Image 1 (cartoon, helix red, strand yellow):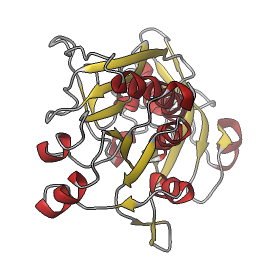
Image 2 (cartoon, one colour):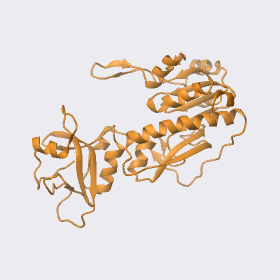
Image 3 (cartoon, one colour):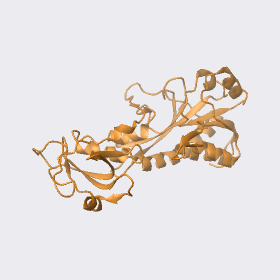
Image 4 (cartoon, helix red, strand yellow):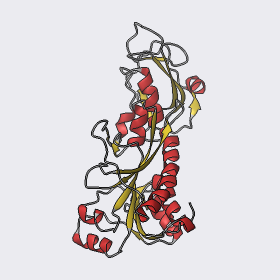
Length: 316
């Protein structure tokens, strides 16, 4: 859709990570007047702990759009400043702050959200990873009219994509990020023309995608092997999957799962020289791994320098 097809709107864009950047750029390219960007404040990052701008903040500076980075939107001063923007619409994509009623009601057309799931499945903070972990066959993006609930607003537009045996958290993130940008432009155009009516989310099928925690990546061999293989893919690149052996944390970057029938070994037993590991159901074999301070290598090269012989019992 080109700017000729679009009634330009005064928009505030509210987002922080890489996921949101294509949507911001798409709105600008469509000819909308993005008068302000809200992003999370800069935070210390890297070894030097220098403050780093969010990707959306950096993109807004490149585009010449003013940026605001409040730590909260609950104060009357920040709410008054937002209302003073005289907006037609606010577009939100992985912003990271809760929008109170005063913010939601300020734009003429309210606030819409670019959400990385097929609502009502996977409301919440980590829908991309949770969909892979659960073994879902598909996911997608939903453009949603926001209300005060957690991703509970009416659905405006959605599109699905398959989750395959090769899908990782990173690849799905990138795919849905671009899909969100594709959907937000026609959604905003239809809202401007009064041609888009929201559909309430069904009460059945609601699931919640809780925030990822760093230690969730620990491989528990008392779980089925297929679940661990999905965990490796879902947590690429963060928080990453790992097990520990003799005090060394070994990241698992890629893996396979096998149905090997009933075995008598306890879960976590190394079954062969290729590092096939028994699980509660099936067997799990890392194929690409990384030791601290080393680069990623295939498992054969890893075992030449770090032996884990058959019969070893790994505890995750």
